[in-house]
Amino acid sequence: MSRPVKGFRFSGVHAGIKPDDRLDLGLLVADEPAVAAGVFTRNRVRAAPVVVSERRLRAGRCQAILVNSGNANACTGKEGQESAVALTRATASALGTAAKLVVPASTGVIGVQLPRKAIEAAIPSLVSGLSPRGASLFSRAIMTTDRSPKIAETKVGVGRTSCRVLGIAKGAGMIHPNMATTLAFVTTDAAIGQRTLQRFLGQATEQTFNRATVDGDTSTNDSIYALASGSATARRIDARDAAAKRFGAALEEVLESLAKMIVADGEGAEHLVRIDVEGARTHTDAVQIARTVACSQLVKTAIHGCDPNWGRILAAAGRSGARLNPDHVSVRIGKVEIFREGRPTMTAKYEAEATATMGRNEYVISIRVGKGRGIGHYWTCDLGHEYVRINADYRT
Image (cartoon, rainbow, N blue to C red; front, side, top):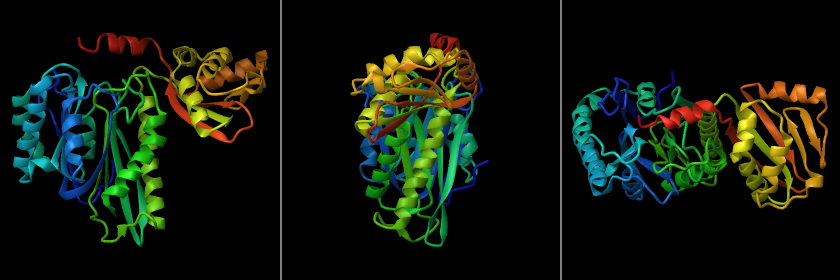
C-alpha cells in the first residue's frame, strides 16, 4: 500500500465501460490547482483525450485527471472530442473547479465511442470516493490487459523536508517509443516550477519509458502526466540547487521502476531483459544498437525459448545502422561470454550456463562493440504464444 502524497486524492469505480464488474473509471485530484507537466505520444493518429490534455496542460496548471479504461476514445472523430470535453466539464462541476483544470485520459479499444452517459452517471460516486489512500483503487481502474497494478514511489529531501514522489502506470501491450508508451501519472508534494518539472519529466521519460519496448507498437493514447502540489513544503525547488538534482533522480527512479514493470508485464511475457551496449562510437549509436536488438522479433522469440542464439543478436546489431566492426563485437548473457571479438566461444558448458541464465525472470544481455565511449541500454521481454492469443482475441 503506497503512502499518501500530500495534497492529492484518488478513487476508482466500475462505470460499465467494461462488460464485467471490473473497475474502469479512475480519478486523480489535487486539493488545489497543481503545477502540471506532460509528455504525449508522437503517433500522428492521436486519441481525443491526448489532444484535449496537451492543449489544456500548456497553461501549466491542472487539478484533476479523469481516466477510463476499456475504451481508447481514439479515431472517434468530432463525437469523441465532444465526449472528452463534456466528461471533463461534468467532473469539474462535481469537484467545484474550472473545466480547464480537468484533463482526460483513456485506454482500451480503438474506434469505439465512449459510453458517455454511463460515465457521467458514475462521476458522483467517483468524486465521493476520493481518498488520500485511494491510489490502489485508481491503479486498478486504469488497467486493460495488465496482469497487476503498477505503482512505484520514493522520497526526496528538500531542505529539511522529506517529499514524496508517487507514480502509477498501466501498460502491457502496444509498448514502444516514442514518448511514454503507456498511461502514467506522477504526483509529488514537492514545490517546483512548471518549466523545471517539464524539463525533468522529459529527461526522465527519455531515459526510462523511451528505453522500453514490448512489441514495437506506439499507441495512439500514450501519455505521462506529472503534478506537483507543493503541499509538503513552502521551499520551492530551484533548477540550479542540489534539491533539483535529487528530485530529477527521484523522478527517474520512479519512472524506471514503472517502465520495468510494464515490460515485465508484456502480454504473455515471462522474461525481463536489459540490453546493455558499450564501446560504441557515440551514445546515440549505442542506444540505436540496443533498440534494434531489443525490438528484434527473432531475438525476442529466442528469449522466450531460452535459446542463447548469438547469431540473432549479432544480426540485429549489424542492421541497426550504427557503425560497428563485427570483429570487435563480444556478447555476454549474464556473466557467460558466448561471443568474443568476432568468434563464438560457446562450448557445451557455456551454452548450458547461458540457457540456465535465460530461464530466469530477469537478466542482462551485454554487447561490447568496440572501444568507444558510447553506452546505451534498452528494456525488452520475450514474445511467445500468449501474446498472439491475447491480441488475436482483444476485441472479442
